[in-house]
Image (tube, rainbow, N blue to C red; front, side):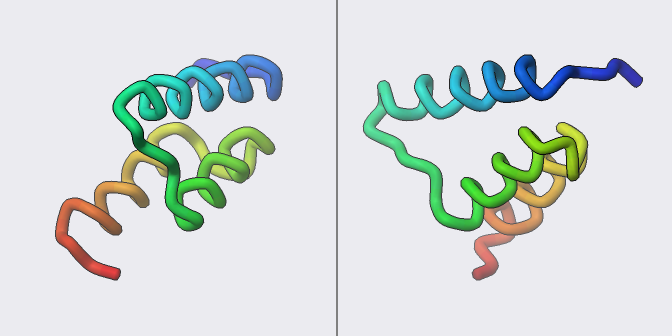
Length: 61
């Protein structure tokens, strides 16, 4: 597994949020909380992706 520093994770999050903003998107509170956890190294990118898919792919609230 590749280790990313906090700074690298922050840059990845900023890029992703910026790309979404180009389309008029803004992270939900749920997603922003996950992104913060990812930046702090509390969840992996895989866990982040899985949580988002579970929340939104099935249309659950």
